[in-house]
Image (cartoon, rainbow, N blue to C red; front, side, top):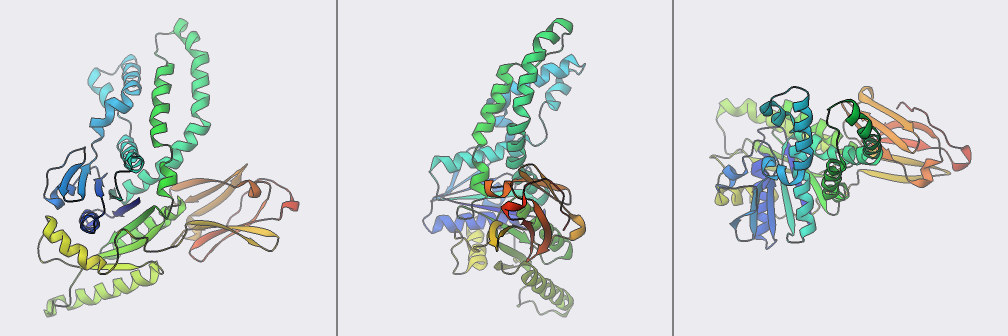
Length: 399
């Protein structure tokens, strides 16, 4: 099974590209589902079909779905929500306020991840196409598996143990509700539904991310940042789709400056994102709504390419041996030295780029080696480790 995620700045046409890709896969005989995780769904508008939170048939071989967090809430989060409502009510909030505040930020992204995982486990699809939200939501969505795994491995067991200890004491001292085992059990069961989703999404053979851009300076700048953050969390980008290029047929002098600017931006994208393939689509003469329009658009984008194929074989993280030492390389295209921090804590390598931070668990053979240096090279971060005989330690390394 192949999973294709499409992201980009709001308004660049990623939903159109995702829908056209899914339709082209289905027309090739692949069982395909396209899923919208964008809180402001527009997939139904693009396909010109009413859609809900369950898969809906669109054409032969193609189903579509718009994930609705509220419909999954009771089943997956009911016990936790009930406790939070009780706790907030004890704190003095009325029922409506408590109900609203019990819906924690990021829940919609978690439900979207659970949906992706269930589709992968079902074995019913050859291709799963994900229409992600705008880039900020996508980065949050794709960072959640790592953050949640870190929390469940390190903090969750401690919280559960502390709750067991303090529950009898607090029950004699105060009426404040303390989470019971059923609450922690519900949280654990929900996490288990997501177990393995990171392995799926970071496996380049199974999953690719494609960034959709317009030939505009602001959009390109955000796409560059997105590529960096995706590399930080280990997600492989296999193509960039440049949408809404002014077609050659437009010859009116009024558009001359615009066409020259588009050509300049296109050249910048091809240089900057190389060796990724850059797919192109011209500005459409009418709205791209319905299967007919999307088929023509998909043919323009992919040409002779198979849309489900892995279009670039690059890997986001690798370790190689150089002499007696080893070097860990992490793909960070467009990263700047002044926005990058690297550190070491026990068995983890800590990397921060701008507002995003990742903890990389080191393989066993690197855990006993000191970090001797870090530098930006070949569109990535290189971290050097001393030979095993040099000993082990924990220190910071600034590239």
